[in-house]
Length: 261
Image 1 (tube, rainbow, N blue to C red):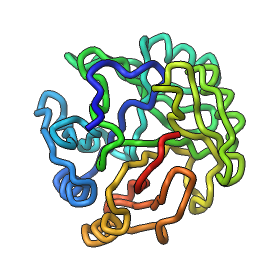
Image 2: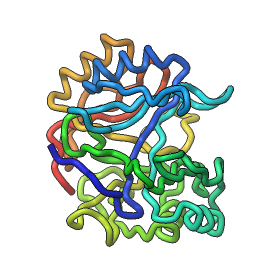
Image 3: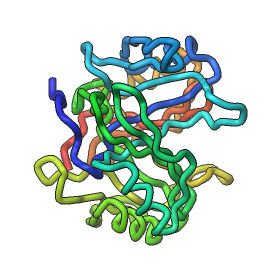
Image 4: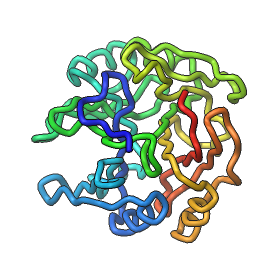
């Protein structure tokens, strides 16, 4: 099982979490679909539940913290200095939704919105590094930003995180993969592209992808657990993929037999 025991390089998508109105129902859904077991961090941390694969942290689910908070997966990008990253975000046209704050014993986090309107998190490790497992079923394996103006998004993320981009043969529209100097073995760490067929009214967003062993089995499990699938699995240069919406409306993708980029 590939595991991470030290901080992710700055700029790496290192963690994802989800806030839901019914924590028990969400845990039941993701346990059935992605095979997670959960560890409750306790009342001190708002019953933030760590979803685990083989005893290693993969993602987290917690209760909504305020009225009107959207039920969406948040992608966190690693930072060596969350305060410096927040400064770069605002200097380059982004907006801070939650200024950097300490999570005692774990790290320092912030929530921001890029100039195109997609929200994302910033995570500076101080004990909790983010995802401890990767390239295993149930683990995060890809993220991308779905933006109405991908060029503006690319310029912003280059200025803040030092990203560079490569076109991907067979990808829709002007989709590009994200590269940067700190990436593991020179791999792509995600992508940026257009909204790619999202329903009208869908806001710009970052999207999380999880690896699965059998995409058809997972699709059936998602429907049986109260979720919905977006059509049928489709082939991509990175393996077969399928969009799923959980019972609370949070969208994510699953990937079967993903190849490293």
